[in-house]
Image 1 (cartoon, rainbow, N blue to C red):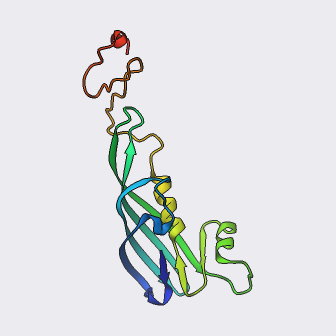
Image 2: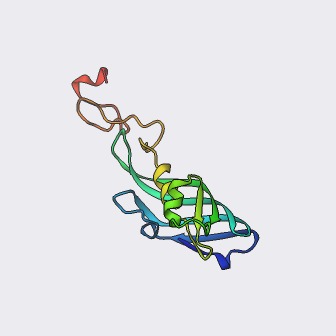
Image 3: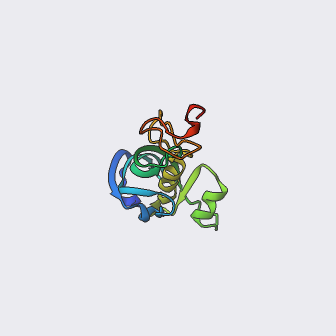
Length: 160
């Protein structure tokens, strides 16, 4: 997602949009999403410096880590980024500077891309062990039956 800096007003402003996941570098191998990413940005511009507070709304198709059922999970993810103009004395690219000077995202004075921040918010916001619900009973370790559907009928049911 690129912001044309001449279109960003001085002071505070708001920008809402929908983006396809692949437009910010999120592939189906990363995560399966239902529909577009809904992005809300609060921008505070002071000259060449811009403070961005963003929210990403997405619906991820997940597989429960206990019962293996597929379910949709609503994600509401926040991110912040401070942006400053690339110092003219430095001969490095904005991307190289971003990696070197953690916490500051540099721009060229014309265009600002925040794809990496959006992608990072989504990928880091996914749970490591997704659950279809907090009370998920999971699968029986002996027979593999889904214990959310009722008690297991295998011989080891009393122990499991």
